[in-house]
Image (cartoon, rainbow, N blue to C red):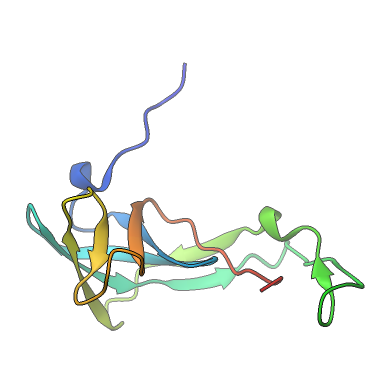
Length: 117
């Protein structure tokens, strides 16, 4: 049996979301939410010390071959910068003031650093 992942519409204050910015992702916590507006704060996110990036020669300086194995330890940061997102007609939560191609939110905390960009 699999559990259905929640959508942002099903989340509430205190739940985690992820800000997707091209290839990097940042964990955040919802601090305010209405039907079409959401305010979130950046979480403290530390790379799990058990994860060690493995680089091989290639690209400009090297290529990380295990970057999709990253594990992060995330904790809410009540003093962090707050960002506002609005629900758009296409169903995506986009940073207020930005176009549809810019940064958007997904449900859950899924931070990621692209070592190969």
